[in-house]
Length: 339
Image (cartoon, rainbow, N blue to C red; front, side, top):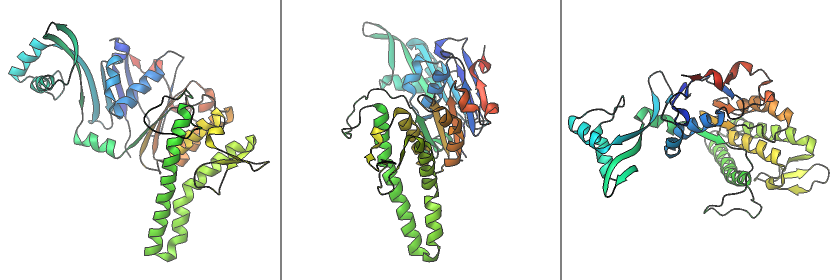
């Protein structure tokens, strides 16, 4: 299984004295700390580099290394160099610091306008700001074969884009659920195709195939129904799309009519279900927001059951999240900061 082994961050918040060395567990990792200590920032840095979204890193850090083995790591580094120095080093064929990257390559990139300018003197560029990320074929395969999910449960007002949504979609959380709903329908369609294929090749084993294929989705529904029972709601089994009914009246309600906490829980568990037990890395920043205390206590266990092949990386300051035997998975951010 693909895992993050170690995170090294130099110059957090562009402060050379703020550095992080974090050794991670293969399964559960809980980053704790007081508000403002940098938990969310560290999570943003790691998840952004893993998803190759390096543009936002230049304002946050000087350098990041994310080790996925003892020798292989994703690498981001931010530089500011004088053009004259770059040209001189390019002529000598010198490497750029400790990276396997030549100044000559950088000069070519600059000539192709792949840069951000810091200082200009009329038409003459004096210095440039740039970043370098290093990806080998091994690292590219890691990204290709690993599902990386950032689960954000903050229920902010929707930021509209070119996608058209249901009229009931009013918040970013609604939008995420709308998109997951589409994936959920595709997921069920793929399960049906799997069963049909099994019947065509070996009809005697089709019952076992159905049981195995639908075991996780049934487990997902069981968890959701258990959580929502106290509020008098259950999943509507007569519909392929996710929707609910009220236990007392049997009246239908959509996913957008759920409470904020119910939407957040549904978002988390549905994301994990759709990973289909594949090798995955899940980032969650303060998932306890709006979640019932009892839900918080069970969350990590349930995520691990729905996808035992996931590495979970959580930032939280909720005691409930670690009450069910996860104390040894907790790291305080103060303990991974180094000078």
